[in-house]
Length: 110
Image (cartoon, rainbow, N blue to C red; front, side, top):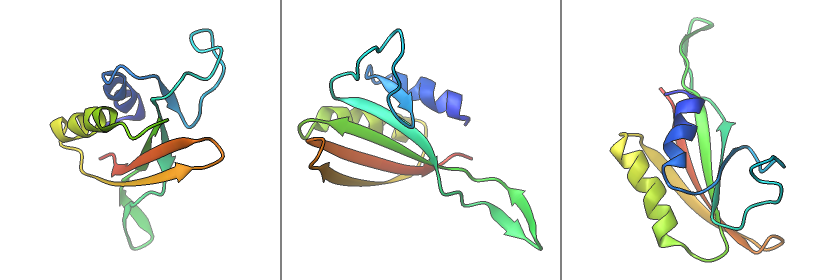
């Protein structure tokens, strides 16, 4: 799966989706209200031996931002990942300065 395919998949949630961070655009001149999704390249886990990469395994983080605990938004992302057989690890933090929950899903694109 490519990053473009991942974005297309995440758009199926109906929430705004951005690579890395919200950037002012014609469609989104202002940061959209939560929930919204960002996805970004993270640490890779390439298969290597003898100083050579044999299989690239890019790490990706999908971030869901909400202003309240939003089980429906979390379920939408998790169902998409499950339906596409993409294993993930998740975590959640409260961002005090932004007054937002950030639910992260760490996965690998193979």
